[in-house]
Amino acid sequence: MAVLITGGYGLLGSWVTYYLTKKGKEVIILDVKKRSLDYLKGEEHLITFVPGDVLNWSHLAHVALTYRGKIEGIIHTPAAMATPEYWNNPYQGTLLNIVGTLNVLETARLFRIPRFLYVSSGAVYGETEDNPHELTHPVSPSDLYGASKGGAEFLTLQYGKHYDIDTRVVRPYFFFGPGLLPSESTFLFRALLGSLEGLEGLSLERGGDQSLGFTYVKDTARGTILAYEKEKPRYRVFNIASEKPINFVEFAALAKKHSKRPTDVFIGPGKLFPRGETLDISLAKEELGFTPQYSVEEAIAEYALWVEEELERRKEK
Image (tube, rainbow, N blue to C red; front, side, top):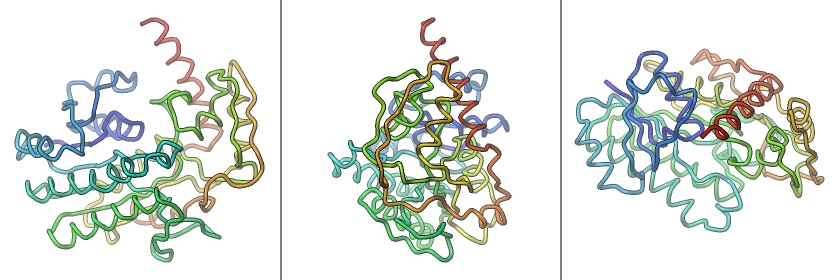
């Protein structure tokens, strides 16, 4: 049996793939293109790559038919992120976040795939005064991106209720790490972590007065798998995040500290995102046994090493 991971070569999807294959689990990756990732080398015998787009329903049906009886569950990761590209093309981003999820849910329903985990976002809570908890804080997004993720959550949970699919949701928060260079990441991480790559002209118009629970992607992936594997969970939705928020300026300073080619970043005053600082993960701790293993500095230090190695690998190609 295998787990189908949509977006399995993305930042989070690839680390979910990594940890599953380390357990000996077969993974079927559906993604728009294959990527060569150093941490997946040696695990290729457990990975089947199928090129495809979650917006292409007929292709999803073909994949499900091809692997009928082999897919034990789906972890659905693709999403348009909260970036200027999203704001400039809200139709396409919202289409991917909602209709892409709907297509994969229909695949699970029609082909009787029993388990489905949706990777949502802490953005569904909007801007909160405290750290939101799944059981006490309603879905109340502050922007269109959060609304699209919240909408996909509702679809996921209702599909589970109406069609007897074991559906779960994880809500990650601002994760980063190996798999993408800072220059390939969202504008936020390009600015805050660009010093690791020696990027020049790094700036954010606002953010100097904001702190967020930046989370290492390895921790996010581990929490996602715990939520997927949990048998008969009492709850269906879990926050996965770092417990300790850090200010944007301090975060960028740590990147500069661990860089071999340090550069400066300008961060203007104010808040960049309408978000709370981080998420309450007490439910994930109690129900899943999830605890982040990396502090922010440990994560940046390890990521800095990967960036150096990745830059060398690309020079050799």
